[in-house]
Image 1 (tube, one colour):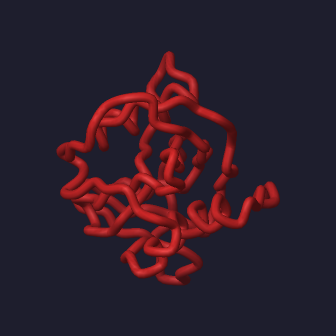
Image 2 (cartoon, one colour):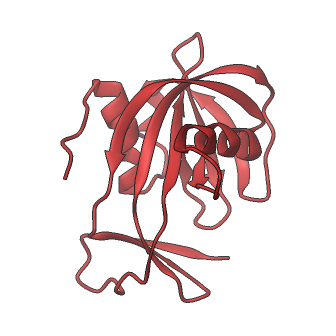
Image 3 (tube, helix red, strand yellow):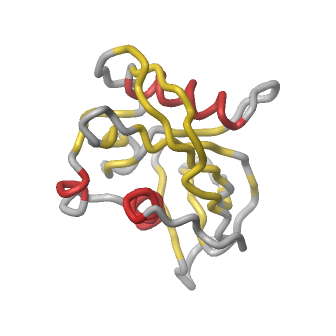
Length: 155
């Protein structure tokens, strides 16, 4: 399913759903961050996705990280809360989702690199290499918040 991101775009379609989601900044012992290249938009992103009924947001981040990258993780903290109503995702099936996501800080505890049906590549990147990667603004903000040690203001 294709996806298009709109952020602060006056031509963006109006949201018709709000779905809780979680992502993770996974950092290894060498200080590298785990990223995946998404199938739906070809951009590099943090692992993450939609929370399921009966699941907590931290459990969602753990599950999504394993499903999308092959790594088991332990949650260490929260990078930030991201709820910009001017940021929506438009999907081919007509859903236009408003962003509502908690981004967690995590460390790997096991597993190995593997792609999923949602990713074409998975890799570990030094923070200095992340700026050169194609990435949507909302994901880059999460990575920058982690790198800068900034807890974003709640809106």
